[in-house]
Length: 218
Image (cartoon, rainbow, N blue to C red; front, side):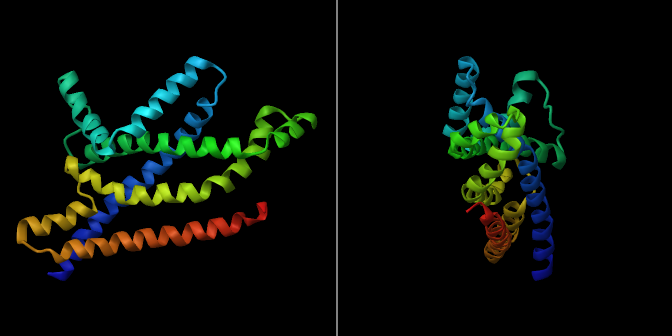
C-alpha cells in the first residue's frame, strides 16, 4: 500500500507545484504593477486600487476561489472553465494570482517607499530618466527589502494550494485525503505532511541563499 500511496501523492504534488509556480509567474509582475498604481498621483486610480486590495485581502481566499470557479457558470449560463482537471487548475491559478498579487503589491509598495528619496533625487541630478532611476536605483534596493516578507508569503502559498481541493482539483491534500475517504487510512495524511515539509524546506533554504546573495547592499 505504501507505493500506491506514494505514487498518488507524487501526482498530487505535481499539481500542487504547477499551481504554485504558475501563481508566482502571474502574481509577481501583477503585484508590482498594482503596487506602483497604488502610489499613483491620480486619485481615482489610487482609490480604485486601494479598494481592490482591501476587498481581496479582507475576504477569504477560499471564498474567492469558489466565486471565480462557480460564478461564471451561474451568471453566464455556461462555465467558462472546462469540466476537466485543467479547467479546475486554471480557475485556481486565476484566483490565487489575483489574491497573491494584492498581497505582493503591499510588500512591493513598502519596498519602493523604503528606498531613500534622496537617492532618486540624486539620479535626477545625474540626468537619469524615471525608468533608469526605477530599474537601476529603486528596483535593486527594493528587492533586498522585500525578500524576507515575500518569502513568508511564498511559503504560505505552498500551503494555500490545498484549498484547490474545494473545487475538486487533484492536488496533494486531495490525494492524501482520498485514501482516508475510500480506505479509512489516516497515515497517508501524515505522509502528505512530509511532502509539504520537504517543499517548504527547499524554499526556506533557497530564500536563505538569496538573502545572503543580497548582502552586498549592506
